[in-house]
Image 1: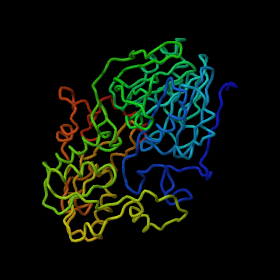
Image 2: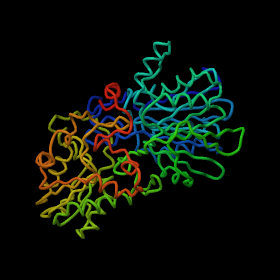
Image 3: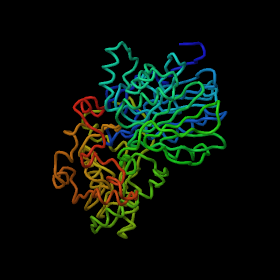
Length: 506
C-alpha cells in the first residue's frame, strides 16, 4: 500500500471481539445491534453517506453516520480524499466510539464516503468494515455499499479460480475485483461493466482520488437519495442524514442510475449502467427500518406508518380502553390506530435506552426474561384495561409472547395484538438479516395458531393491499413499486439455490 494512504483501523475501546450472537462474549448483551435477540426484530441493513465538494467532508460524514446509526451498529468508517491520496479510519462499534476529534482531523479532503454496517452476509470483523480500500492499476479505490449481492458466491468462486485472492468475506469485495479486472482503463466504464455482472440489491458509493460515483440497483431495492449543501453534493441512505448536517434533499437516485462527480469538471454527470427494471423498493423500509423523519421516494415515513395504523383499525377494530405501540418503530402506527378508532393512545410500554453492557452471565431463566432489560410496562396505564398493542412485525414470535405477558403481568385484562404489516413468511436475500423460513412463525403457523402462541386475546395483521395503499405510492406498477417478497414470496430477482445457500439470513 502506497505512502499516500493513511490508515488506522480502530478497535473497540474495551478491546473485545464483538460476537454475532447474544451472550457468547464477556457481556450479557454483547453485540452491536439495537434490535438484538432480546427483541427478536429484523436485523438492520447498512447505511451509506457521501460528500463531494465540501472542505469539512469528514465531519459531515461523522454527523451523517450518526443520523444513520439505526441502520447498523457493528462498525463504521470514513474514507476521504484530498485529490492526491486517501485518508481513512474504520473501527468496530458505534460512530461515537470509533471517531474522535483527532481521528476526524486526520481525514483531510473535500470528498468522502462513509458507512455504518450491520452484517447480513460476511463475518463480523474489522476486515469487513467499510469503506473497503483497494489498490489497483488505476490507483486507489474505496467502496461502500448498502445491500446484498445474490450472485456474489458464484462470481467469487469464478474469480478465485482465475487467481483472485480475497481479503474479506464481504460480497462488496467482489465488485472491486470485477472493476480491477475490467479491460477498461476508464473507471466509469469499468464500474458499469462490473455492475452489469452482479445481481441483487445495492446502493454503491465508489471513490477514487478525483471521482465519486454513486449507483443504485436496477430495481431500486435499497433507498438512496441525493442532497445539497451549498455547492457540495451529498448522498445518503435516508434523508434524515441531510437534516443532521444542514443539507437539503435534492432527489432520489433512480434505479439503474450511475452518477459521476469529478474534481476536474463542474456539476454532476447523470448516466446509467442499466435500464429500470421492475421498481421494487423494500416495503420494510416504510414499515420498520427507516427513521420516521426520513422521506422515501418523497413519502414521509412517519405519515405512512400513521396511515398503516389507520388502515389496520379499519380492517380490525376491537373495542378497548387504550392503544399502545411497541417502541420505537410502532409508535406512529399506534397513533394512527388510536386516531381512527377514538381509543386513547397511551405510553403503555417504555423502552430503556440505557441498558449498557454488563458482565452478568445470566441463567436461562433470566435470558428468557431479557426483554425486561429493554421494555417496561406502565402499570398505572394498563392495569385493569383492555389494551390494543401495535407492533410492526412478528418474526419468531418469542418477543411478542414476552411483551403480551409483560402487559398481563402489569394488570392488563385483555391484550389485542395488531401488526402493521402482513405476516412475515419468507426470508430476505437483499440485505436484511432474517431467520431461515423454518424459524419464521408465520411460515409455520396460521394466524389463530400464532395468536395462541403469543397468548393474545386477538391478533390481526394488516393486509398487503392495505399496506400498499397506506404507503401511498402511485398505482400502475407491480405492488405499487415495492418489494413484498417477505410477505408473498414474489422476489423481483431470480432466486436460485445458490442464492438461498449464500444468503446472510441462514
